[in-house]
Length: 345
Image (cartoon, rainbow, N blue to C red; front, top):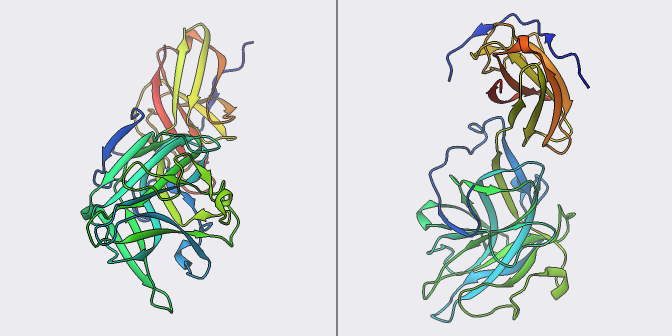
């Protein structure tokens, strides 16, 4: 079915200067390019917070613990893994991880931090999909003591580039100390606040001496603990929204989109040429810079994004060729999100 295609976009414009990783891989953490509230781009945000966005007011009286990693007095290394979930509507990259632990020992993870991802789904996968070794010099520590002088540490690793899928994912943040007089680490869990997603899972790790006595994932509540989230916080950036156009001028063409914000209105724009038009501040998406030029800049059509990916068929008039498309989604506040620019097929 043919549809009315081009709708004029009334813009008073100004111009400005233009300005997957395979599964089961070991990574080395690069320097940060996307973290911190003052530097975080539009598509970067807190992905998950185990304390429901209250981590800044962390308290010790509601933290129960499950063992993570450590060795004391040259005994065999105890290697316990804790996997917790995070849920996101869009695929992207983790840039920062935070975790709180109770520390029994000197408190410095001499062997850094190991970060696992365990795939996506209702439960963690048997084998990790990503293993990241972070050296100790890349780990930031912040210390706390409670009224009884117990030692707690906030572990922060920045500058990461760990891919995750849309949906429910699983992660382990494991401080490691394999020295003779190293520390034991107990990942703190909130047992009083509501779960965000699913409860944590535990099992023995692949190194050292067994801790729990089983090597398959089991929920903490199944081994006598309280169902709870771990005290973790993740920050990251969504992968860019992309579009594609396939077909021919003077006939049917398929317009597709991927990694868009779900359940949103996606507007396809058309222009005769590429450029760097900026939408005026008095219009929707004011201030947003496009990759299109001013010549014949128009609204083509709008669609609903559904779950974030999809396609629609439209008639592509021969008179519109050659030309270019770009999609835009209106944000509730601030600049709007734009896609890549694609040429006519």
